[in-house]
Length: 179
Length: 290
Image 1 (tube, each protein chain N blue to C red):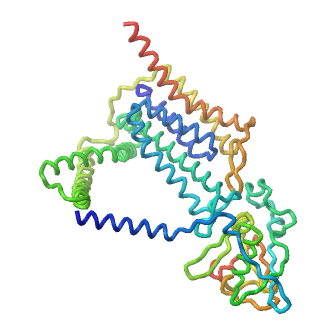
Image 2: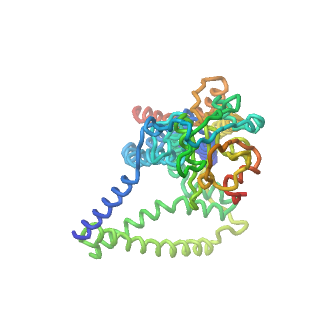
Image 3: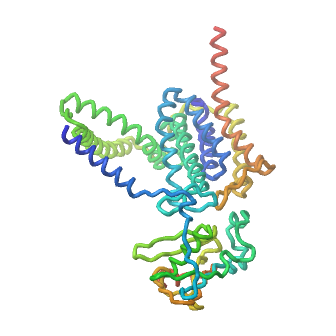
């Protein structure tokens, strides 16, 4: 009987562990974000999210996505907007805050080495436009050389996320390692 | 059903199973699922069916909920789980794939009842004796192991080896039965292979006695099945009845194209039920005349 009690406790422990690791949020709770007001002395960056290249290669596009009509016809997922740069913010934090505020569904992949990879934004996912397609970003016109959560920003930086249909820039987002 | 010619019966199950695997359309899957469940109930009895539903429905629910954990695509977000959206689309896709899996499960269960080991060896014995033996052995593996396990378990209990203590002791006793079962399975497979070789199985020029006669009903229904299969397969492959789940669920269109692919599949699924029902009706009718 003692053994049984022990087993029961172990099971209870595991169940509690699982439930404590689960966090359920409603849609409104998740998207609730606070954007700092832009003051004269605040540091800011500009963020743009576009998918022009996907529209140029519409022939390769995922048929189901094309039929759903969710793809913006002008290629703008998020128009150029100014956001306040908080202490220690990377491209990832800025993007996450902006996407939550604008309620644009974004899926991240957190890799084991601590990097963050953007799998899809605004229903447009990697591989949706051919086998070499995916999201990549540039800061001040420079294609990214590291993961988006490792890139520190400074005042006035221009971040552009764009969808590519050819591997070049896409692999850069993964830190150059994912050929 | 069970007195159908093996070739016709095999063709029926083959076509239904292949077509079920090729579609993700919820209506087609539901049709396949319900006809498989019904046929299983008719062949194995309502009690057995209820028993198997009691565990297959929870499995279905579990599989349904598994998909949204891994897939986060979709426009209708239900809630966020650890920062990841759980979407209606992912749940629907999970439901459809679990429906496909379970309808295959039930079709294969019917397959196992109708096409016995004898019939399998009859079907494949001449083409490839090895394949026939491997097929019949692997298909009967699980039921056979289960039967043997219960036997070993009973013997262990009778010997008094069984743990009388709590849950852990009982589990340990089951594990020892399981290890006996494994030893037995290895030994019996070697024995079976040797005994088949000793009988000269698979040697050229060896004939086999079989009791199956091809009646007119078998030929007619066989041709009909082949025709239905040959119509449905290219239609499904060319996308006459497609359904897209991501990024938004599309609505079911009851168009000409849909019916073109759905109607033959429907007939294929209903075929064994009608056959079995007809046989039962005839049986009832003639026994009532006695």
